[in-house]
Figure 1 (cartoon, one colour):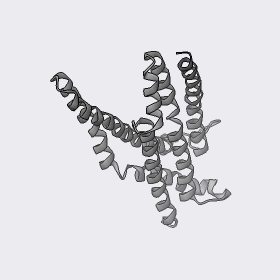
Figure 2 (cartoon, one colour):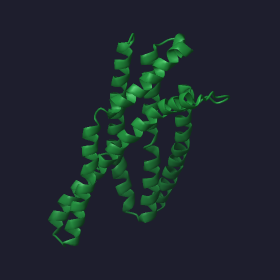
Figure 3 (cartoon, one colour):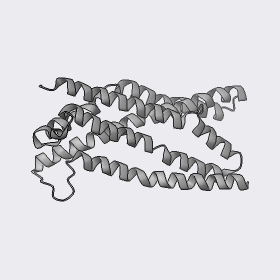
Figure 4 (tube, rainbow, N blue to C red):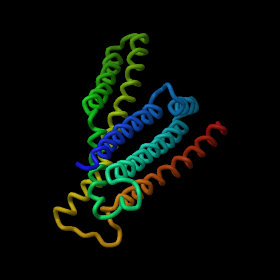
Length: 225
């Protein structure tokens, strides 16, 4: 492989994107940070405000992972194909698409750890359920509730890795399908990484706008209450 250093860079980019998605997921789902505390504060005024704030925070939490995936897609492509205008020629496009697929492999290289953290959530959740059904004391419930909250966070981080890697491999799957059936796109070219990046950003925008709208409604309701 001539550009082995660029392929290595694509793997590193995939790892970095995976770590970034995990950190953002932890920020939006852990009880130690502002978003969950904000939802908890809204829970003191009734179910309506907590539903509004929860939906708003959940929607806006999708924006950063999409941004990271978009940057990772572009970075992995340029790393494997090489920077500059010539990177987008037909000769180098295959190398760039290969870099995107390798970035997904880099993200999934920590699959053992992510699956282990994903499995922690149901276990801690069952512990809380058992304590509740057994009518154990409040001291036991306080411990299992803390474990349950941590389990929800770890489960969300594991799912973020899985979804992120699937998004990175989507373009590689498009290319494989087109090559298998001898498909030549006209108009919107799904084999172009710029089109895929645009689709991701376009799909994110409704969630962003809806989240900001829900947040505004929630703040108004909180002030009224």
